[in-house]
Length: 283
Ligand code: AMP
Image (tube, rainbow, N blue to C red):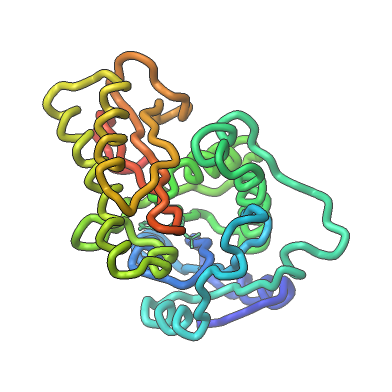
């Protein structure tokens, strides 16, 4: 497994790898969710590259950039064990050369849900992913349904900028009790960790109602809200029942929907989602 930092090293290592190449962008502190993307990429491609970069431009001024968990040695050992060919660990200077003033911005679908609560977040994501794509030049790139809006935004960007890259979205990996795996779960103390199952419980309750015939978007949102509000350690930021394609909130009947939410458990902000009525687990 080759580990590179500079663009020159990356270009040289990339040239030596067979096509098609599958690419998994990450911020590190890897868990089974990340590894599931790596395994999908290995299955579909002749070679696999992973990037590890905690991208400063996608964090807001009051977010957790400084405290975001990092353990490069552990990450590299995990990727080596998966048979990854190339790992790119750029520095901030490599990704953002001094004097940088160019951004990639997807307009409409970044204004709702996470984008409404984290101004500038998706501009940071699309800018860094565009640069990662330019550097790695993969044939396929793998993203998690866990960050459903991010997956939609990247699909949009890849289409709009005519990247010759297939965007593959992989299912959410969960802990046995339903908590979606996330590097940020490490912030939770034992009581919070228990309370954090409330996101999956809320989504599952709404799904059960949908399967029993409930189609009213307000009613589905209310079921999720009530479940979250019944958990003393949880504070709801938003719940949504949105069109899975446009991500616009549904008013009236939901024949298919993306249920999603952001919830603070203690000081930790967690997100989760579930697709209903599309016959698929992912976009
Ligand atoms: P991150 O390192 O948090 O930026 O995540 C890197 C990639 O892994 C993103 O495409 C995420 O959507 C994906 N990912 C994170 N957690 C999970 C999970 N629990 N299941 C599936 N994919 C995930």
